[in-house]
Image (cartoon, rainbow, N blue to C red; front, side, top):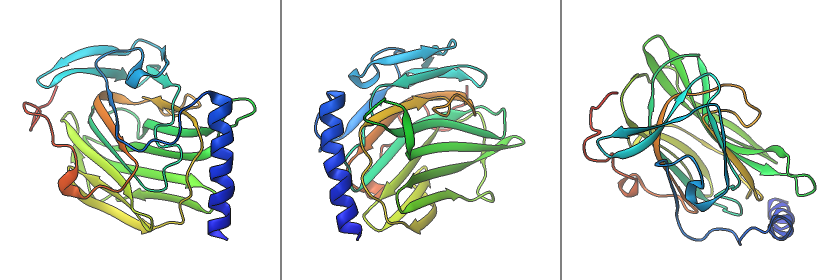
Length: 236
């Protein structure tokens, strides 16, 4: 049944790629560097609010105010991938308890609207600390990876990662495992992404993002991005 569902979804993916004018499913890494507000990763990017380009010891990043700043990118960089890794270098700066800062969404081929299948990163802010929430949802899977007891200081740069190897879904902070669970993941179709907010414009993020990297296979922790020089232990 799972193989049949995967075949159906991959057929839909091929049709969706044709409708959206998208390329075939990615076979190499895609890296988004947030040193600009337009054409992130070479994809059309819509800016809302007033996100700011800031200087860091590792280059430029984009800062979000947690109120109305957001970027919307016309690409789902993991469309078609049966396994994956998402890595990011970011800095959470506090604010509301629930904040979604990366949202990948499959889109309906008929109207382009976001559908239920999605992969995302959130933070949960508790006082002057935060914990990670990674989430994947689609046909046959619906799993959040969050451990409220694993707290980290706000106002510092971190690496965060989530992986799926064909069986286990895992989340990491600075390469250290946070949580894992088996899921029956099936590839998602073409779509779009939001940065700094949920794709329906709630749960805004207060903090900064330097880069995000997408790989259509599960990387081992020793293959993860390293925190760039100058950001180790660095705050604002």
